Length: 250
Length: 263
Image (cartoon, rainbow over all chains, first blue to last red):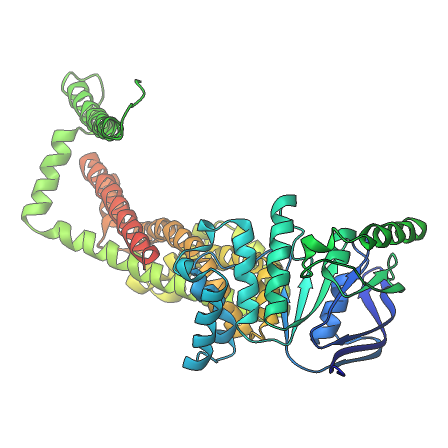
């Protein structure tokens, strides 16, 4: 089966202008994302990873090269960015509200999402009554409510403590697979990238270039989930390889 | 203090504490008045300079029975209310416009800072000349005193909004108006209530200063008239009424704020 290409970056480059002059952030970024694929950009902090997401979503235009996008994108951020004065239901429907799409049909889909992902009983709670992991799940459902084709995940787990982080990444991975979405994950965590992605693009220091494009192939018993992936024999090989590359590049 | 062992004990303890506080407050107030009266009667203090509670009560009764007290209170409150509404509304509108047009905000910034640092009461005589020696001039002084602070503090609340929350709304395609209406405004309800509370006090200052300068009615007029004819009981009565009015308006705002927060 030939899958549809959703995102394509063609030798994209990005330059920012500041008081101190021109600052090249991205150079020659080349990637494709197909339907139901998850890819990860892995690189050191401050290398310009988030800029790639802004290019994909069209919030920024590349200074060189081209970006093509088929379908709607939805963002998920490092922090959940829930609005404390809105209850869970109203936080989740804010995207529909902003896009003037509060139709019975769309709201029925929201209800289904709430029921499927264990938030139905909490829909009239306020964000401060929920745990960090739960809040991040609300943030994902808020993004899914506007039915995007591609999820842009901007270090969505890095604000959580290590245990919650594993659980939430498991949780969010399952939801993405179940809803048959594609995703672009941006992270500086090697294990997280290997356990989550089908393809890893390893980035250099700023200005970020792609050092390697690594398809992740894991031999697993049972379903692939981030926690399961960590048990695959190849996991350590990928980790060691990426580690070596990152150290050499530093 | 004994630690409560049960919830009932805890409630009883809280109640006792509350009564103790109210009782002490009343004791402090009446003790002060009592001591003042005694000091005046024993001629420890000069009643010509300090007056005494019974004289203040007497003159209050006189103004109360002939009804003129309501005229003075009413005028002062009316001026304060109008000054407050105009100053706060206009200040907030200007702050919103500055948030909307960042370039305008940058251009206006030094002027606002200077206007803010300037003691506005120094301009009261000119403002009264411009706006007329009457209620309109007095209201203009109140507006003038409250508007600059409102603009500066509301604007700084607006621009200090968490950038990532704005980015989240942008990611759903929010317009600038939607960002204001769905994020900036609800996030700053509490801050705006604080601005309102500060403004009530500022407007009262403006109104009293204005009444000192031109008025023939109002509490400020009573105070300045009393001091000119050396009727300290009249001056003190004015101050006490002013205190009660300030307290009343603050309570009103607190109730209003509480009401809004719960809805």
